[in-house]
Image (tube, rainbow, N blue to C red; front, side, top):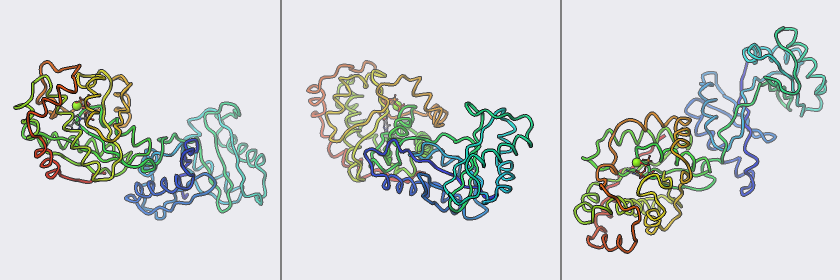
Length: 389
Ligand code: ATP
Ligand code: MG
């Protein structure tokens, strides 16, 4: 039997956004994510988007997985497409939901009839289909209040759709509906999670990684790219940039007080990230910082970092414990990759006693001892670009 995916979009978040813009973006994102699997047609109909495969070779299971990772969707179901004939509907219900029904103890039938010309009313459809299922699967009983499975039969203008329980969608808003922002991505646990969370709020992502070869290896960079590609399963394509950061780090080490290495390094990262972000029309930066996690993430240190920033810096993890962050990292499947033991540019030059309460004036003076501007320009010019999805 032919199958389609019925997609319910997130109506509750429509407030700031006009509904058709929201839906158009969602359809565009769905098209992009499903097109590598084969040809699909998308039909907008009665607060549902119907994704219909147009050829038999489509990897339907993979399509269902992918829909589950598209933001802007509250729930979705896999539906069998039946005909406007009650006998056929009964047989098809059994066929589509056989496995689920055999695992369930209780069920109820829910009929929706938008085609008012259909011969049976909704209660009649429920009775017919319910009675049929009871006769075919004797272990089942009806529970109208709290059933294991709700069998839904939707009689629409052209087709009849049959499906079981709705699956939970990824939530959030369609990627792109909030604009574009640049994620500072390291090989750690936090920054990929931060990227996922902001993509969920409708941001298209760029990802900027600072690499310090030869202190850090090519494999460390590959690990970060791998993390970006896992995030891209949710966010869609990511413009991935690798900034050669070694010379700047060495200049910091040779010219600034050791206790300020980390904070000055972070300010240099921000300066470069801002410029790269502007070039690609990003309107904000994203980091994986969490208050108090390390010396560079105290209020004072964050204030010193922000002092060089001319666009908003989103820190979605700021109020989260490591454990909460890890839970999300596991859910989105970045955790294992983040644990791979490769060095990061931050750890290469970590001072023994970093300042947790740096003063801006002191930092600015330390930075003025060396002319970093040419090195910043060079790093920007030498940045390598790649598209990750
Ligand atoms: P993460 O787990 O994301 O590495 P962290 O707890 O190790 O975070 P820091 O190393 O202090 O924290 O980095 C804080 C944030 O700065 C990171 O979440 C990330 O957004 C950014 N960052 C750190 N290192 C890099 C890097 N090499 N390239 C790009 N961004 C980085
Ligand atoms: Mg890190």
